[in-house]
Amino acid sequence: MRLVIQRVSEASVTIGGVLFSGIGTGLMVLVGIAEGDTPADVEWLAAKTASMRIFPDENGVMNRSVLDVGGDVLAVSQFTLMASTKKGNRPSYIHAAGHELAVPMYELYCEKLSGLLGKEVKTGQFGADMKVSLINDGPVTIIIDSKLRE
Image (cartoon, rainbow, N blue to C red; front, side, top):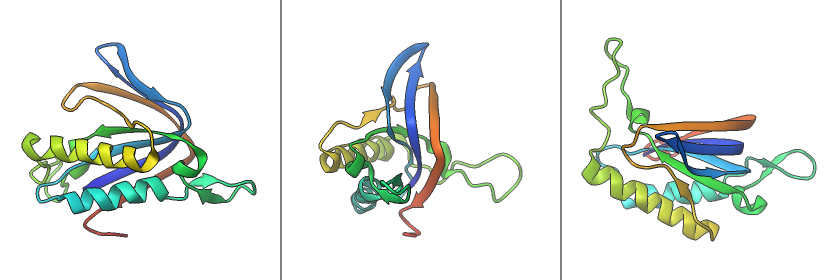
């Protein structure tokens, strides 16, 4: 699994011109699921997302997590995160999980993260043509891959 985590002052998903979900201060998380990903990947990434200290403390130092600041999370599934650009100019998505694995893994990630935060994680709609809007605060953007664990 691969995540792109952005600290935001606001983020939203619009589908068909209608606001589907949105948050204020918190994290916008793009979620990519690969073939072979497991619930252990989900557990590790959900814990990392909830506890990653990327919000400023009273001294302006990034020392607080989304949990510490009471922030919200908007998680959007994005298979293009699993793109391989090794050959040619057209990305290959051969490593991206199909719906039968990706949907339950994405839902499990949102469920686990909701449990850790004690509040609902807002979502996009799997497979929909979504318009994602955000204001990246900082900007702060972190990429995490459960296979690299770094």
